[in-house]
Length: 288
Image 1 (cartoon, helix red, strand yellow):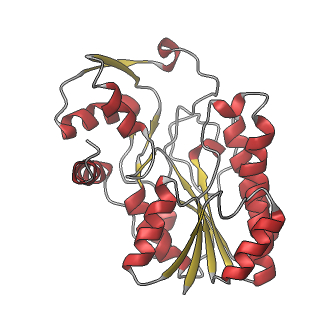
Image 2: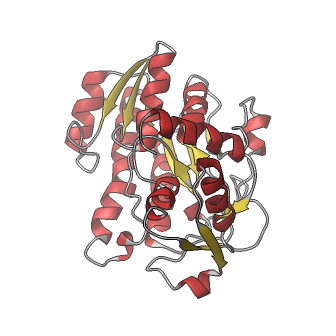
């Protein structure tokens, strides 16, 4: 099998390429320098020449607040909507599978019940809206598709909440972190293993995939410092107390992973276990 992976300079694309290599599966990694996903001719040429059996599309605009800027919105739409559409068009032409990475931000973030894959979407930010529209573009064009929604991603290659907390703690004795936004972290090392399992099947559809367990950002931050052995005071605040950000953040990012198990896939390990292994990985790579 040969798999083309987009966004390999990011944390998930990097880990997917590592996982393919571990299993002896040929991976063709591309990023903006090799393939501009907003340019159909570029996408058509690169994927057709590579002739893969599947595409795992990890590339995306993920700067949630910046996406709200008027001068950025068209670029965000091109990357998160037209990008997946261009890839889906080529996958349809070549009759190959496509796996599209999406996000908890496609929901309105209200309530407390974990979101099911087939729940109605209702994004409240530009980022969430474009990711939802990207999902729709793939579903309109393809039958052989996987859409995998993730949340709170962290990995070795790129920036994320864990790295930000550890960096800020070097210059601050006290930090404030919101305690009314709930969800689950996603270790890209664990997620990559699932995606490589999934792409080798024909169990198409929409899935949710995060590490197990629901927490808020304050609890996550506290656990990060404890695991890393960093002495810093973390104070919980509400989103309202913290201050309004440009983009509305979902209060409820809990997502049900029951469908994974129902379709024969392994759930990702507990977030505590994932964090422990990630901190170890950071230390081994001299990033901590």
